[in-house]
Length: 282
Image (cartoon, rainbow, N blue to C red):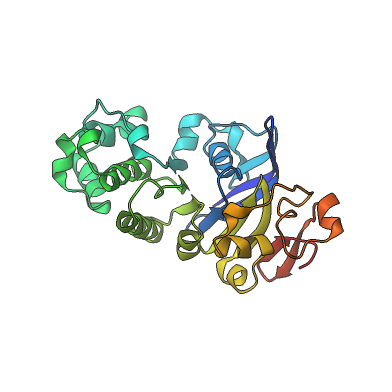
């Protein structure tokens, strides 16, 4: 099974997602990394059908996603969000929140199914009687993940799932996602601004800047020969990006920029077995 975006375009007043392509196999982990405002959450929203693109195609196993009913789609693709407290109804006990996905789809979960969810997410049974406000951030995110996997989806879209957590809990959640990927064969798109996390968890990585993919490929190949922008992010200097704009979004800051970079956006080209870059100088 394969999830695929083809030539996605989405225009806003001051920002556009341009010619975005992504292919994610079931059982694979792909990272999508970029600074704030690069378009990561827009991509997540399109993948979760919370936002429609202006043009382009979205397929799952070569079937047009927009031909699927939403309930059918939700059994295949689920999301995990940045702030679990906002994703969970504070007036409902955890017991109801864990059962809700089953109920929405016309099923009543057995005690065994709920126990299995709790066990998979390392949640104590005592949380069942608690309200979201009574749980820690890490426990809330585990509950949110439990809801997401309750219907056995083929894909998870995780949009900054650790950014609201402290460093120790971040590691626990990342290791949990790796475990779910391994044991349930879930395809995972891990979206983050944190390159260290993305490179740690992902087999493939796409690097996004101002709605444009500048680099995509196997993690090892990117680490060995990064795009100038990716190298810039790896050095932790992304906060000093220049306001000077060119056809390439990195033009104003790139130490290797040429005149052509200001007037012409380079196409994605292959520089390795599984490594694509959008760069005139590579």
